[in-house]
Image (tube, rainbow, N blue to C red; front, top):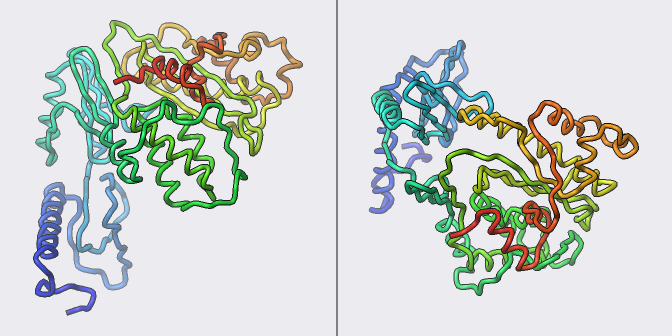
Length: 424
């Protein structure tokens, strides 16, 4: 026998059980491949090259004109035909989203690799879709969505609550912080970190793992968006001070592990955004930090915290330049709402706490203030003229996007966290 193979006689009971399980899974996959007629076996050609197959890859089954020869692997997985969704129309704005509008109502399908999320306004339409798909493919109906990609979903007639309590517990256990003492804020108020804070290096892999876990946790915790984004700036050559700051975040997670986002039923959808920036907030390069938040009614649906690519010469420029990114996001979200037949009747209001930035969007006469700003950033004005968005001044004390730009004191942080809709 080839030395690269293991004889079953050399395996202990546990290993033999694992081998049998692997073979069972492989047989199941081969059966599905055969059923879907994904490919057929042919004699090996004499002078033709045969490619190898990455056994961990899932791929979409599409039509190709070329003849492809594939070496049979020892085990592989074929999802197959994920892009076939009956008569559903693929959204031009989000390629994982498929929709079907009929007299019976709207049906929506979201595709993630080999998982399908199905929703809509007519139960009969959804039942027909599931029945047809189960006839065509080997599928399992998992019922009402309760857990997806690390997110826990609780659904009632009037609201949907989304959190990551189980995921957060795993992070705490991974770093030995499951019994730590909680704190009220993720970062020390007004904390300013630098890449040159000290020379005590820490395990780079461990730091990246911690911050990466926090970044994924922000899928349901917008109150941690600035914190995770801020700590990610020190992924390369982190020092002890950075790691201590990251561990403090875990202490905050410990005390707020039950929190998540609640979406409540409403008769109509009001779509608006908030944006803010912290001029020159970075100690290392004096670049500004900006953030935005978008709402549907009282439910926050999109948020971001990021350091700007260029150094702003003024607070107004920092706000105005970032407003372009906010406007682009607002336009994309408006298109997504259009796909879902929730057309916005008027311009989307974006609340900005800088009066001059708002004036620059409205008044083309302010040449002296805007001549040094690149033309691409004046897309804000174009979007306003098209009736898609409109900037509006909003006081800094009540600006919810402030939580996306800096480390805040307890009272303000908790007030804005509540405004974000983060609750238990």
